[in-house]
Amino acid sequence: KDAWAPERAAVILDNLERDPQNGILHVFSKGQFARRAHPDAAFAISMRKTFYTGGGHDVLLEPESLKGGHGFEPERPEMLAALILSGPAVGRRGSLGVVDTSSVASTLGRILGVRLPEPAAPPLSIARNP
Image (cartoon, rainbow, N blue to C red):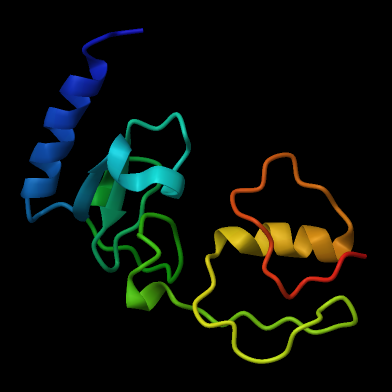
């Protein structure tokens, strides 16, 4: 491992973030993103609208025509979506308010009776045990 790699990466990412030609809105350091990224990640990147993270460097320079992708922090209003569940294993009705998307997999796992190895978040309180 290169002990200086994180410092060099921080400088590069800082320069990319400052350049308005790039699609990077914000670079988060490890201490700023907690559960938002892989635990081994040193940085997380939030993209400007119409830009997405992906393979190649061109995604930083040209808006993408796709309408979905990675690279946005979940608190952004445009990231909100509807979650509708129905069935005998769903025990609660009504609005859940804003739901952490990390809870969706563990909720569906509980409903389907599937144990996930390390869920990112606990299941929502609507899911009955099978």
